[in-house]
Length: 294
Image 1 (cartoon, rainbow, N blue to C red):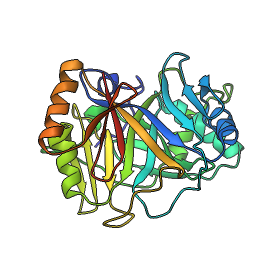
Image 2 (image 1 turned 30 degrees about the horizontal axis):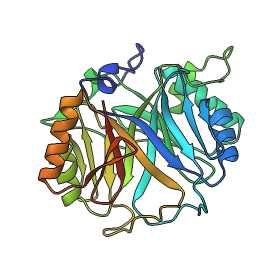
Image 3 (image 1 turned 90 degrees about the horizontal axis):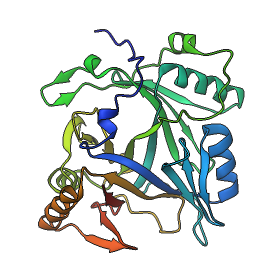
């Protein structure tokens, strides 16, 4: 099979309406200024808005795909809990990932890496231990499907081939403007009720299963918009509200009718749906907080 990368950049159909996708992630950090230095200087975000305790980050100067906040009496990231495994930043082109890797090496940032067949990815952590994936997609025509499930794996990344795309005359400065939040991957306490919530409630489709431990779901035949795993243990507790980690993520639905239909489905399966500061909020069975918008 030909795994040649799609040089035309992101296939935006997977991250625009009418597909349901993750539009924004909000995480909690111990020290806002320390985190801003990391997310600006290392990752390449720009600040869109900032207060004493929070900041919205952007790549295009108009839309925020990531925000960070420092809770009162914040405590370090708690181990073996539900919540964030990683959020994933999708870059437009292969040269962007190559340039970014060179930038990380220059700053002595430790990385992990995988070839997932559908994508090529590297993994890092922010100063608080929040997981971050930065990746590029291969062209969807190169994804292999077995019925309704896409073939994914975790194979060694071919750095030699990837780094041939480095632009020597263009050192890394900022994330490209058309960078998007590609997906989010969560620790959950179990998968049976979780699958019901995300499939029957939110309306996603299962596109891959890793045994009894992980589930990957998407809208519009993407390889995954959300990953769900029990790698922190069945019955893992939720972290304290003032702990470093995930605060919420936002799902962008096609329109107001789709939001109302989703609320109806969620309430039908007994899920909690509330309004918080005028925004529609729900919680998965592991109490991961989700905002619904359009």
